[in-house]
Image (tube, rainbow, N blue to C red; front, side, top):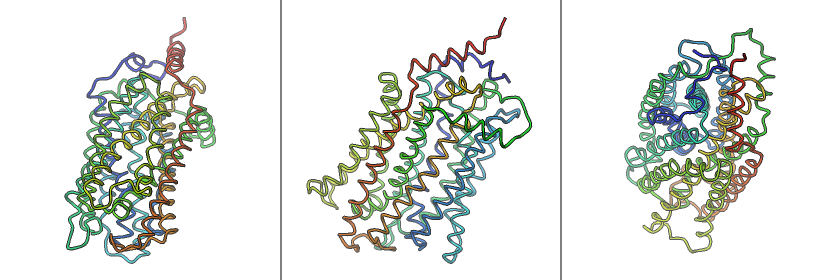
Amino acid sequence: MQQPEEAPAEHETGTLEKRTRFYYGFGSVAYGIKDNGFGYFLLIYYNQVLGLPATWASQAIFIALLLDAFSDPIVGNVSDRLHSRLGRRHPFMYAAAIPVALSFYALWNPPALEQDDLFVYLLVNAVLVRTFITFYEVPSTALAPELTSHYDERTRLASARHFFGWAGGIGIAVFAYLVLFEKVGDVEGQLLPEGYQAYGVVGATLMAIAILVSAAGTHRHIPDLMSPPPRRRASLTRSLEETRETLNNRSFLAIFGFGIFAAMAGGLSAAMNVYLYTFFWGFQAHQIGLIVPSGLLSATIAFVAAPRAAMRFGKKRAAIGLSLCAASFAPTPYLARFAGVFPENGTGELLMAMIAYNIIEVAFIITSTTLVSAMMADVVEESELETGRRSEGIFFAARSFISKSLSGLGIVLATALLAVIDFPTGAQPGEIDPLIIRNLGLGYFPMIVVLYFSAIACLAGYQISREQHAANVAALRKRREPTA
């Protein structure tokens, strides 16, 4: 394998084959399924179905997120420096598949336990799932800047990854609502344990397949990827100092700030969605199963729109503009409901309105976050010019760290809202005080809007334009040229 200063020509200038984009993106199905489970179903499953108090369940999920988040920089740093015949990234990717599947299955199939033991079971298995997925996700995402330095090709790679991530999460959610969550008597299927147990089996199988297909599909690129730096004696102090120096990049810090608030918004939205759909909007499981798949259309729109927006406006301007659209559009149905101009619960008009709303809002979100992911890849060359080191793993691990740790805070915010409005445990639709339902909507939408606009403000500090990226790549190419 070649040393970093001898990067291959395709890495420097070329676009990639469609199959490479497919394999790189397809592995994100596993991450999408994991995110769907943790964001949408885990809290309501352990709280409303298994009877664990909401504060206990959210605390377990949050602690797991914090503990797991510290695995990201470790995996990122080690994968940047790993010497093996399979390169820096692929050993982690292959090793993750089976442990991810087994731990995900266990999470959704707990034995009969008392509340204290159930809390520990949730905590331990949540940590295992998230840690094992880190062993795949961080090295896998770090492949993007290694596969190509092309400004627009990186956006296409990010689009593929986000598309498959959303497709995986949405696909299994639709399957759960339409097939697994079967209503029994007067009890909605999403409030029964059997559906979640089957969900664990299906999710675990699909996650293992996605990871192995992605690793095997990108395997042929191993000889062309960047090689690790020379071996040296391990030094925690030096590693920490190099990590601090690497992450002290203004453009990275702008993305880091965006990630803080975006992760909190995502965690809040995901945790609240099932509550809002079930109790605020009064949808049954099969109706939610019709709303959720509209996100596949959103992901398709974003898959096409993100590269086009980056080419026309540049990644930064496009990301800020689309994020503003998402933030402005987010409260629309709630404001319309409180103003008395939105369709009533139980009507076909409400279902159609929420499908349309979901398509537009989610398309804005996916497109903007896709562009931010592509912006992260462009930080790699700027950092290499400043530090002399290639640190893809560290950068993408830091972004994953924020996404994990702060999305857990979003779940805590959701739990706090439920506690403040005194939302009952074990509640059934139609049996809750209408004032509590109204407060659910009144409390949610201002929180999500504030988080969105805070995330957008952080992007102003990003400095890498198309022209600056081209200059960075050219400067590195010149640096790598052998001296006479």
